[in-house]
Image (cartoon, rainbow, N blue to C red; front, side):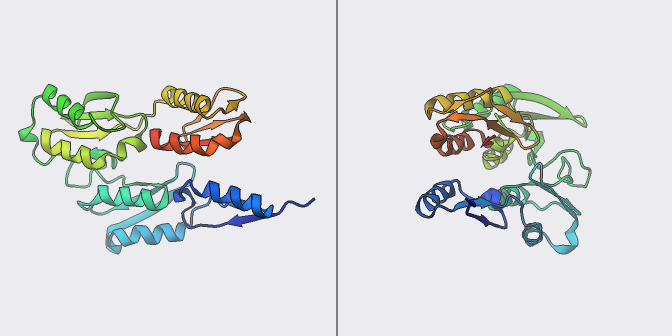
Length: 256
């Protein structure tokens, strides 16, 4: 018997809300037709969105990297609103907007990426221990917290690196981090490292919670910052587990 299937194409498939899974399931139950979603982003739509953020003369180059789900934009001058732009782009597309020219200075030396937050007046920096205390206090009531804070240095300038379970989680708090740079007088950055072991532990806990039995250990995929699991039984719990995992880690949970 020939399988009946509908393929949906969206400009930004990685930004689709997970609630669509329930819609797809109901559609299959009611019609017998399965629904697939084309995973390819519409690069033309993404380029138009990027150009809406920056003036045409400011954009030197745009490139797309589908494996990492990143759009790289080389600019003449980085606008002051860049962190808001990066956040909005991710919300609309599900992809990261990488701006290699974003850096420590007001010039164009490509030292850091968009995860570096520069203080307004470093001469007013508080003592190191006071800065670390203020960071802890700022995240006291938040769902996510940096589990490590390190003092680092680049080109003779000290800054505080915040390590979250994933950089995706850290970027959720870009506004708070920018506020902390003003309060402390310290530059801060979000580490690009992912706590792989903790991700796998969370997946195992979610599998127990939603009664999902897996064949082998979860697999981590660094190129996409995602975890895949081979499900033996309990597939009906995957949608809830996937949604909770996304909230907790900012990463994706997929079935093999």
